[in-house]
Length: 174
Image (tube, rainbow, N blue to C red; front, side):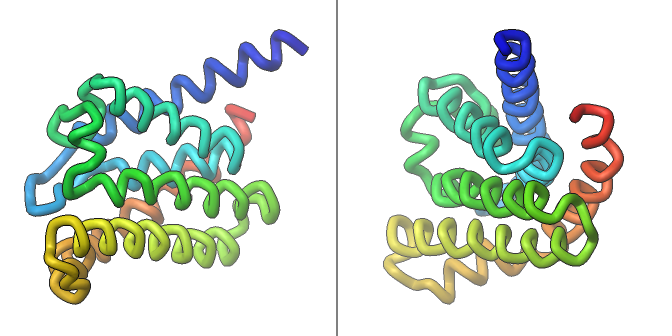
């Protein structure tokens, strides 16, 4: 039993590290294009809800204590409360949704696509409301235009890639 817990801790830690590294790969904009979305969806699709959420929370906690794990090598509570904080917290919900889908339905194409759509819409909603009310004077349409529209196609590509790679990697890891 102890060996299994140790293995889980190592896997969750490595998954959190992957999210950290992917957050550093970015194309700057008002809300930067990063590979965080890829990493959160990949980790959750491979590990399932419990470990996927755990890895995402570890990533957030590492950033909260000041390690530069967020995009642009930022860290600290200030980064979490910044313009991208809502999306970072939204990753937890996305991880739960994607992980639940894989726990419940395996990595079958249709459920994966449907649950991923729900997951990214959840993240977009949480992040956009955060941005609109904290940084955009409550202008939800303006926040949507800046924070979501430019990311839809790149996120579809990243999520598709994450699910495709996860389907091949999960049997090896699990």
